[in-house]
Length: 156
Image 1 (cartoon, rainbow, N blue to C red):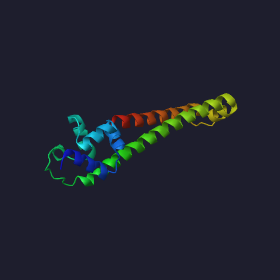
Image 2: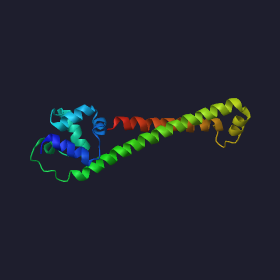
Image 3: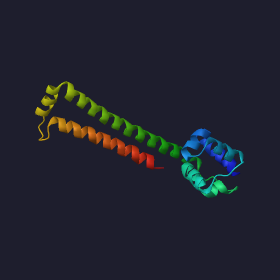
């Protein structure tokens, strides 16, 4: 089986469109189309990315008579990894948004109802007043969300 046919089969068995695979590999949809039609061959670094994404060996991709040896069962694992990464990004974004929303609510409350802000400070059992605790919690939520987002954007 030729490289073009293997790429097509891997993509279809993974349930991906050309656009989705192109996005995962950082190439254009047209590049995927050319590879699958046999009009072009991916560059070596892209071939490595393809083998990692589908969890197949370079031998399988490049040798015409290489055996698939359990490669299809691993395609679902790659898709699961991508889904988990996406879920972590969403969780990080939500955490950041909640932290910012908390800071905004605290700021509005402090400006519009200073007595409520004073009550929050008086009800605190810790030496930092209630306003400080709330501020720290909101800032920690923003930092935690940002760390999750940045960590997931740098992972491949």
